[in-house]
Image (tube, rainbow, N blue to C red; front, side, top):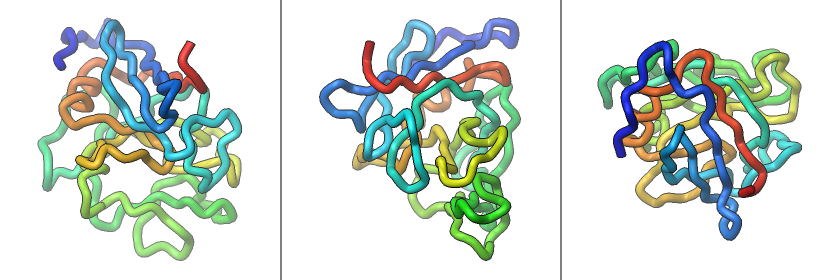
Length: 186
């Protein structure tokens, strides 16, 4: 699916995630007038997310930056800041650690999410500004928009889309774009 090309002055302000009423692990991501399928957390969408609950957090959050695997794909086109994922990149998910919900270098002494994965889910990642300003221990970490896998299964709390959809989305979002994650379809 191709979206109309956006210029820097008319980027999409808001992406809207609409969970499926029958299967809360599935949803649609509304980008302007377009709808693309997406996968959500294995527990659906929660308003009161907690670390490890498998839920995607409800609310409106900024889109911080793009991370990508340069060994697998070319640098994606986006006006968001873009950073290459390295083999030693991780994301701390230990609520009692001072680096909770922050990028860290591996090996790291506390529990972490590895960003350099064998599967392709993190070949392109948009960091969602959930629980990062300020960071509150225990309410969830490492919430991203990343890629789906062929199995089409749910995420651990993120939003997942196909690679073609992700590359199109990146072209029309920018530093002032936000994602609104709804608890249920309206």
